[in-house]
Length: 316
Image (cartoon, rainbow, N blue to C red; front, side):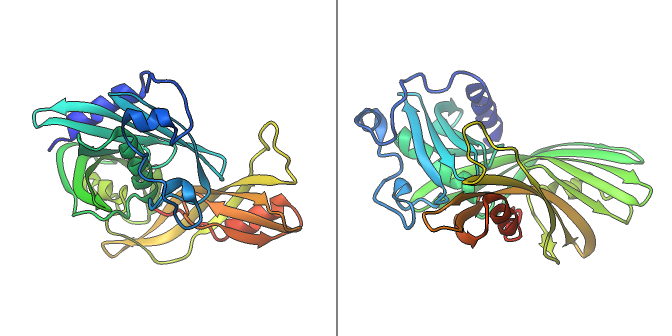
């Protein structure tokens, strides 16, 4: 498996200085000269910024840097977050390749592409993959390099997984770590995932083996059996924001799931953002990483956010 070198290289690059070229708008002449058309800009339904790439319409192109060795693409999303994809040229025993990851969504997932892909294209395609994960057009996972620790009342497990896939005509390898810690409680057990996403499972039976629970962290074998029950918390407005015009609400959810016939409770967090439209009393709202926005009639932004929150579910 090729994961170890890919993950190490990207971690070093992301925590260093990314893309030393000057800032410029995506799609400028400088970027085209640097290597590509940023994944295409022919116009997609709802948002012409992304061409045919499956990126939420609430995310707008902001800026990019591209050099001969790496690229970085930033998107400003309607739910109040900046999402960034970052790719760099790397080499391992199999030869040169492009290694990519994202910050802001799909974090801690890595992608490997052929070195012939223009870097600017790779950054745009990676952004789309990060939004879509784990529902990618890809083969089943292959996992290796496990690290396990098991005791009487607690355990932990880590493993590295990868799969081959395609985005349109572009081939890629997706890889990630799965890390879980489980512990016994008086009423059962709790398992907390830290990679590839933050998530918690609780059950009323004996503590499972962490070698089984780590796959839950990537959604493998997890089947929801109920709609989520969620509570909402209004975020304070950012400096310069008009609370009558825009809002963001954090949503903490729990839902019943079954895993291998066992009934568990799964805990997740998400959020929703709303902005007032040109129509009085109507707000356009979008849930975290949902490609579709919706119009919500409401007397003010806060009520719009709380109404829209009922339509949001943790996607992964």
